[in-house]
Amino acid sequence: MLTNNCVFAIVVNLLTVISTEKFQLEFQWSLINYTWQSSAQYQEAVRTGTYKPDNIFPTGPKLYRDRIYLATPNLQGGVPLTLAYIPRSAKNRTNIPLVPFPSWNFHGGNNCSNIQNVQAVEISPDGILWVLDGIRLSTIKCPPKLLQFDLNKGGILIHSYVFPNDVCLHDGGYLNDLVLDGDFAYITDSSSKDPGLVVYSRSKNRSWKLRDASMLAEKPADEHYALKIIPGTIDGIALSPFEESKIGRIVFYSCLNGYNLTAVPADVLKEEAYHKNDTWRASITHVGRKQGTTDGMMMDNRGNLYYSLTSKNAVGKWNIHQAFNRDSKVIYQSNLMVWPDAFGMDQEGYLYVISNYFLDKTRTIKFRIFKTHTGTKSYQYR
Ligand SMILES: *[C@@H]1O[C@H](CO)[C@@H](O)[C@H](O)[C@H]1NC(C)=O
Ligand SMILES: *[C@@H]1O[C@H](CO)[C@@H](O)[C@H](O)[C@H]1NC(C)=O
Ligand SMILES: *[C@@H]1O[C@H](CO)[C@@H](O)[C@H](O)[C@H]1NC(C)=O
Ligand SMILES: *[C@@H]1O[C@H](CO)[C@@H](O)[C@H](O)[C@H]1NC(C)=O
Ligand SMILES: *[C@@H]1O[C@H](CO)[C@@H](O)[C@H](O)[C@H]1NC(C)=O
Ligand SMILES: *[C@@H]1O[C@H](CO)[C@@H](O)[C@H](O)[C@H]1NC(C)=O
Image (cartoon, rainbow, N blue to C red; front, side, top):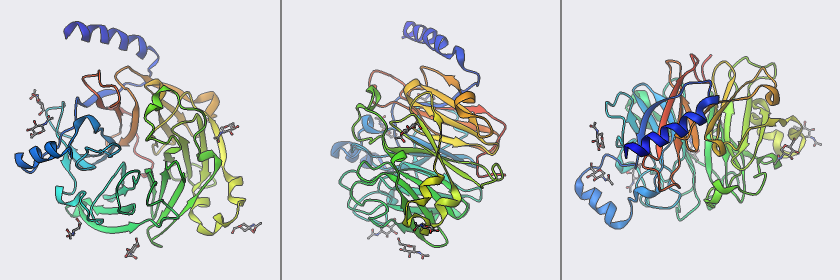
């Protein structure tokens, strides 16, 4: 075991030579487990196949106060619940069990008010947790929805919105990731049948969808994408901070199976009527070609875009005021960071990234959360 670790460490060192940013390990897991209500509940979940640890991977990390919220999306069955959290202050950083949010009773079953299948959440600065319950690839008979919980009031549900079928397919929709712009949420729908950018307005309590060729998978899958259930269409999304651009805030997106980084002004997304004809497409811009394929990405409040490079086990960085093709850089690369997925930021100046490679059954540690000091806050802060 020790010998293996030494060999592994040498390999890591060779690969991290180019890293300019220091990411430190925060949490790691060899498998995901939850805090069960009783051993009887656990035994039953194992017996019926409701809990199959091999099928579970964590994503999300979004931070608020003393918690890190994580989603455990259900892509192949065997996932008993899909939204949970861990305490940030936990002493034991290995295999910490996930605590169901808001409770066990709020998950699954045939009750469509319950949380069914979550891949992403976002938290507004005032503590409202937006939950994207939007993976509808399999047998779930409940329509996709967006839920809001007030974390300052004990996590009570304060709002629920069901997406109509023409915005997100009730059979085949895959709401993957979101950013918040005050009243609005911009959401990527990675569906293979109807991919697009979904806009939801809280005050109007309405949603609409934009579709464009830039949201389609770009090229034939490389070996990473053997997992056919992940479509490879529009996936990562980021929003520029306030006052960084004369044309207002800008939404960036990329496809999981693609190297293009694309941008569209948020003001263009906000007007439902603009999308009745094709003129809005003139405001889509091609920002540049990334160094690899990207899953999650995030901007801070100084206009720095951090993006995962899944095909390189790396993180890229670019500042919105610079030229992408000239100035974007790989800032970290490590064999420990297999499939960097999603980002989050705390309020103390740290950026978090989670890596999860559950396809590789030979690795003992499959999931890791890293953090690095940026001295900035998320795009939602001024
Ligand atoms: C999951 O947690 C329960 C309760 O703590 C424990 O009994 C069980 O062995 C754990 N399962 C695995 C696969 O680690
Ligand atoms: C940390 O927690 C895991 C899972 O509960 C356990 O297997 C391990 O022994 C713990 N380690 C320490 C140092 O307490
Ligand atoms: C369905 O789930 C909601 C939210 O968890 C809960 O308030 C309601 O009581 C549940 N209904 C039934 C019939 O279980
Ligand atoms: C928002 O829309 C949903 C439809 O999904 C509806 O059930 C809900 O009552 C609406 N809420 C408000 C406050 O209008
Ligand atoms: C990616 O960008 C290139 C260069 O602008 C463009 O030719 C190509 O059509 C783009 N691909 C997609 C799927 O948007
Ligand atoms: C397309 O829609 C925009 C915004 O609603 C409108 O200003 C424009 O006149 C429309 N163009 C055509 C060709 O209909």
